[in-house]
Amino acid sequence: MIYRIFNIFLTSRILPKNDFIFDNLYTMINNSFVIKNPLRHKEFLTNGLLILFLFITSLSFGQTAEAETNFGVCKACHTIGGGKLVGPDLKGVTDRHDEDWIIKFVQNSTKFIQSGDAAARKVFEENNNIPMPPNNLTADQIRDIMLYINNGGKVAGGGSEASTEKTEATVTHESESTKILAEMKQEEAQNMYITFIVLSILILLSIFDLLVTKIVKARWIHTIIILIAVVVLGEMLFVESAGLGRQQYYQPDQPIWFSHKVHAGQNRIDCQYCHFTADKSMHAGIPPVKLCMNCHSQVKEGKRTGKKEIAKIYAALENNKPIEWIKVHNLPDHVYFNHAQHVNVGKVECEECHGEVEKMDQIIQVEPLSMGWCIDCHRDKEIQFTNNKFYEQYNKLHEQMASGEIDKVTVQMIGGDECQKCHY
Ligand code: HEC
Ligand code: HEC
Ligand code: HEC
Ligand code: HEC
Ligand code: HEC
Ligand code: HEC
Image (tube, rainbow, N blue to C red):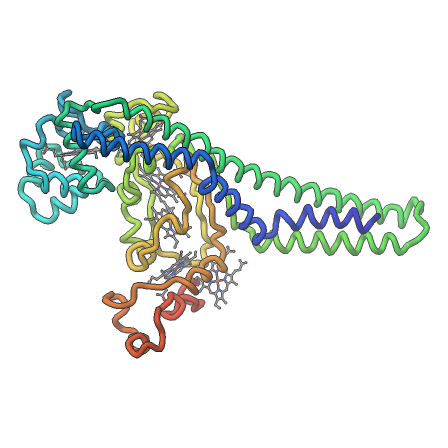
């Protein structure tokens, strides 16, 4: 009987706490939501239909429903024949510039201006030097948008509804997956508290009976109860203190309902438009209020929160108070971590460490940020070794590569598991 009770305690305590199982559960949930979810199939289907639609309309009208979706982000700053917003009215833009120019400008206007193009610089200066964010669009997608603009901002046909439907379907099921994750975490914590309290009461009862009431005559029962309880409590305290300050699945509420899904997902704003120091400095940085105003001087209302949340941006600006975002990812002070090294030199995608941020309404820390996690990646991760000026000094490795002794260089091989690289 006692064995059974403790077995329940042990499993309720250790099962959800076990990182390995928990990680697999997380992957399973993720898989079932992301890969096997029927909604996804629906999305594939809609995409397939869109492509078909694209094909048909490209024959008859020359522009597509996708163009309207893609133009969604532009609408924050541009009109078609409705006058100037943040950026110029795009009506007749194809008469002002040729196709190649527009493609370059839309993909990355800052780079294009810096490359010394006179026309680009002129447009930039005429618009009070407000930079236009880079866009992750292919040349074809941009041509498509231009056709859409030349058509007066109308889609030929009824395809746009399908695409709105698609976004709405994904909205609900993705926030659900994060919700489930949060619930699992809560349950895990609850299990732990219950075990902790029950065990503590058992110890007290045991001692009380041993010394005062003396109901149970066999003393060895007391000894066993106390011993086992102490061992389990000890293990709990050990695991907890080892993970102290570590907070996988941490998801605090932020002072403004800022959604990465709305910005990086639906509106496809580049991560580095806002986190603009990620590729050049240690910190990725959180954008200042002024940057929000590049768009929100025009976009005054959101689909989900109306005017309420965006108004907080104006309030912050007016009171000259920065928004107090709560930091989600935290490493202890004795660890050195550098974004530029990973993003710029290592070419590691944000997603590998932060998960699918563009699908999150609210940021959640999906990785443990433990030492094992850093080192696991360094052990396997191949670096772009040849033709990279950062690695020229590693002569021995270059020789081994040339002679075929090794076929790849991992982060570990250049010293990625040396203590002093990560610890001050
Ligand atoms: C954050 C606001 C913003 C968004 C979003 C935006 N633009 Fe712009 N755009 C500007 C500004 C500002 C300019 C003026 C040039 C400059 O300052 O660099 C501009 C200029 C342009 C120009 C040159 C216009 C001319 O008359 O010379 C084109 C073309 C253009 N944008 C297309 C797009 C397209 C296509 C999208 C969507 C994929 C888009 N823009 C999204 C702000 C924006
Ligand atoms: C190799 C893993 C890794 C990659 C790749 C990575 N990050 Fe991070 N990121 C971290 C860690 C670890 C922290 C916590 C840093 C700390 O507490 O000092 C963090 C913190 C942040 C923060 C909080 C502010 C800060 O600078 O500490 C932001 C914002 C951020 N990352 C955005 C990004 C973006 C955007 C990208 C892609 C351009 C990216 N990260 C790529 C691991 C990564
Ligand atoms: C490059 C343009 C751009 C920038 C920069 C930008 N936003 Fe937005 N934001 C948008 C667009 C577009 C929407 C969508 C409006 C809608 O729902 O149709 C939006 C919506 C919102 C919403 C309402 C969401 C909803 O659905 O109710 C909030 C709140 C918000 N943004 C906050 C911010 C904050 C805070 C910043 C600065 C850190 C910021 N935004 C920077 C373009 C931008
Ligand atoms: C429109 C501006 C904007 C864009 C675009 C944007 N972010 Fe953010 N990001 C923010 C703001 C504001 C915060 C702080 C509020 C929060 O945590 O939600 C933030 C927070 C974060 C954090 C949490 C930092 C912490 O506190 O530890 C990560 C990670 C992050 N962003 C990654 C990304 C990635 C990856 C992308 C691209 C897929 C991206 N961001 C695109 C504005 C932006
Ligand atoms: C997803 C993979 C990945 C993760 C996770 C990761 N790194 Fe890295 N790391 C890399 C890559 C790739 C490089 C190679 C970049 C370079 O050559 O400088 C690197 C390089 C480094 C270097 C420089 C090593 C050297 O020899 O120059 C340090 C320091 C470092 N990482 C610290 C960390 C810390 C601390 C963490 C955990 C908080 C971490 N990394 C997590 C991929 C990763
Ligand atoms: C790739 C980066 C990396 C390397 C290499 C590395 N560490 Fe760590 N180490 C970390 C991170 C990240 C943490 C914080 C983990 C946490 O909060 O649990 C950490 C935590 C620690 C801690 C504190 C343990 C705790 O539970 O708080 C010690 C001690 C430590 N490391 C020692 C070492 C020693 C010794 C070496 C060399 C054999 C080493 N580390 C190499 C990244 C690294």
